[in-house]
Each structure stands twice: as C-alpha cells, then as structure tokens.
Amino acid sequence: MKISSLGEFPLIDRVARRLPPYRGDVRVGVGDDVAVLQIDDHMYQLATCDIQVEGSHFLRSAITPYQLGRKAAAINISDIAAKGGEPQHLFISLALPLDTDVTWVDGLYDGLREEAERYGADIVGGNMARTDGPIVVDVFLLGQVRQDELLLRSGARPGDLVLVTGWLGDSSAGLALVLNPDIAIGKGQREQLLAAHLTPTPRVREARVIAERKQATAMLDLSDGLSSDIGHICDESSVGVRLWADRLPVSAAARHVADSIGQANWALALKGGEDYELCFTAPRGVAQDLAAAVEEATGTGVTPVGEILPEEEGRWVQLPDGREIPLRPEGWDHFRTGGKETEP
Image (tube, rainbow, N blue to C red; front, side, top):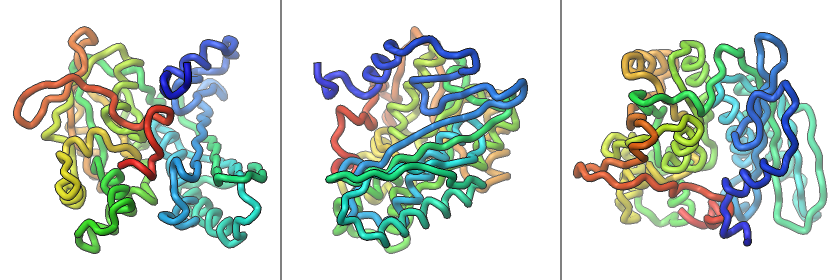
C-alpha cells in the first residue's frame, strides 16, 4: 500500500502504533497537533512543529520571504493557542538550495522574528542544511499552559454548541486570487483575502480568554478545514455533530470570490483550509456569554455554527434549504490532496 492510498491521519495512527509506551510525564502525544508534557503540579509544557515545503505549501513567486516567515511562525503559534497556551521559544530548521539569495533568508527571518515577538516568543535555535530543492522551512515551538486551563479535543459533550472565531473561507478565497489574479475584486477586499492566506493571524488572545473562563469543553484551530477538523473533536470526544451551513461566517469578500469561481460560499467555508480560526465547543447555557466575552476582549467575532450530537446520531451538515447530508472530511490531507498552492 502506498501512502497516497492510506492518507495522512491513518498514516499517523500507523506510526503511533509502532512506538513504545510514553513516559509518565506525557499527557498528550502522537496524533494531536501539540504534545502536552507535565512540568510540575501546576503547568504543562506544550510542543508543536509544522513544516512549509516549497511547491506543496508555498510558491516563491506568490509569497515574499517576509510573508513566508510570518506564516511559518503563525501556524505553529496557532497550535499552541488552540490548547489555551502561550508561545515561548521557536527553533527554525531550513533546507536551502545553494543558489538561494542571502537576502531571501534575511527576509524570512525578519518575518519569523516579527511574528514571534508579536506574541511574546523568541527564536532560540535550529539547524540549516543544503538541499537540491525544494526549500523547506521547519518550525518547532515550545509553549506552556496552566493545567486547569488546558483545552483538548476530547471534552465535547452532546448538547454543546460548536463555535468559531472570525471568518471562514478567507484563506481559501485568497488562494483562489493567488491562482487566478484576474478575478475582479476591489482593492481592499483583495488585500483582506491575500493577507488571510499569506499572513494568517493566530488567535492567541481569543484563546486565552476562552481558556481563562474555563467554560469551553474542547478546542482546536482550523488548519485543514472545518469539515475535517471538527472530525478530530468528534473522534476524540466520541460524539457526533450537526453543522449549520447557512450560519457559517463568510465575509463579503470571500462570498464575492466564491461566486466568481462558481462555488457555494458555505462550501468554501466548510472545506477551505488554513483559516487558523479557533473552533471550540461549550454548553448551550454559557456559549453566548463566552462568545460575548471573547468579542468584548478582542474585537473578534464568534459565531455558533453547529451542535454536538450523541455519537450514534452521526455527523451531518444541514444545508441552507433544510436538507441534511453526511459530513465528510473534505479539507486538507497531505497525502491525498495536491499542493496547497496548486489546488484551491
């Protein structure tokens, strides 16, 4: 069997089964985006890594090295935020062809440094190696969280609401503009969507508000698309879900692009990846107050987009016309999907 037939997450499960039992300080290990390690009786160490590969995650012709540096840091910071944590120390590993201009490396580190400093983290090490191509930017990030503020994927319960921060589909619409620059759209909207795709904003402040209030039951960030990522909460929490397509928050700019490429805006929001918004669950009785607290503290909108069901009731999308269809993981899979910069 080839990995293209198996897929990313079954491959991760296969690898995990070949590993020995964890040491006693491991709270969460392989299979999650973030490892959770016990430091003492009060704090957890958080550790995550994510990679940017030229041709798969980015095209040099479509992103500046500064933007790539910011994005490479941001997507790791987003993983730490999704646990309710705060980022601390980054390690950067690079694989570079010999003909790479040193000013390209300068720009990359300018972006990495600026994004890290924005959230109180620093760059403390890494590695560099030669390659015949493509360029590889690999970021490893440490963070921390109080034990009583840790949020996992495993706490959702039937009756909880599913909520998301910000807009969904902006990054996917930005990718469509990268690949189809002739799409007619206003300058301000174009800049909004390109920024969402090229320099996403990790929701660190929003996540800290959610974690500190201790009302959410599960949380993750939306890197592979809501249709795929909500499945991780369902798997880890042993629950089902119903998403409401007509309530997915889609910006006017993303709606315009969706219309231009002939795609329903809700489909763009459901399947598009790399939004790096937070998706979290909370009991109905506190969800509205929690959403209001996040909006008041950060200015970021929070939208209820679905409800958690008992596991035996399955996973569904309720379409705008009221029909329900099975929810299928149609977001990003590294081994079953083409490059992120080559397929919208």
